[in-house]
Amino acid sequence: MIPNFEKVIPSSDLSFNYFIRRECEFPFNWHHHNEYELTAIYGGRGQRFVGDNIANYNGIDLVLLGPNLPHTWQSNRTRKPDVNRACVIQFDEYFMGEVLSNSPEFKAIRILMNKSNSGICFGGEIRHKIIDMMFGMVKERNFYKLLRLLEILETLGRCDEMEILSAKIFEKNLNNEQSNRIDKVFQYINKHYTDEINLSETAGSVHMSDSAFSRFFKRTTGKNFIDYVNELRINFACSMLIETDMNISEICFRSGFESVANFNRRFKEIKKMCPKEFRNKFLKRGGE
Image 1 (spheres, rainbow, N blue to C red):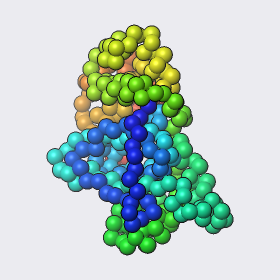
Image 2: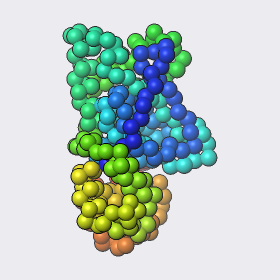
Image 3: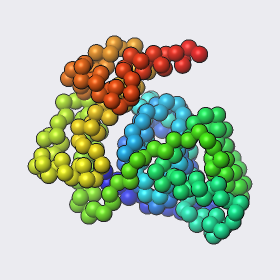
Image 4: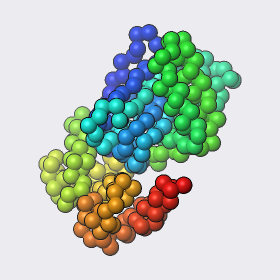
């Protein structure tokens, strides 16, 4: 899927961009940019999209993204603007001049930045420490913001609890018309995946035949249309399994599936466990 290109405007008094977002909702905004990005989510729930990876987040998330890796976070909507909070740091590979490239002291950071080309999600206790540091930077003078960023990257570079997110970097050699088309498709799917969406309707939304659309979608996303829709539906189902006491059949139909048997089969394919096991796993964690 081809994201919108986002032009990052450099800060006038910092060698990197630093900002905090507090919103009722993080809307879906599939995009990419030339800069590295370290994003900390604190509060709220929703879904994270990085490359070809789709995952739920619940209250806390810490991800480092390499240049031009498409991504977005989409939160559940709330009435309170301070529920969904994010701290974002964007920087290019030369934000420290040639120092990062040439100094042995920054070896761990260089390795980390190379790994981030596929996106990295951090776990464990280090995640909480780094998120506190990132949000705390808002009170620091710019010189100390820079030192803190280097400390954060060095700490993450030596972290063992990390997950590489995207198995595939999407094709980017499309013209503007093709790029706009796949973006429109993605927006359409994101809006309708819990309904009776099908390939023909989606292809029609961008005035393509079924066969042409199938080839186009596969080439630009690396996934078949139905596989992508099922992954979205299963992640939506996971949120309901965790957050509600609805029975599994009700969750099945609310997620867009037409039969419980198909829902259970797809759930196990994607999550490697049945819906009941998934719910019990989280209930057990909540009781610990």
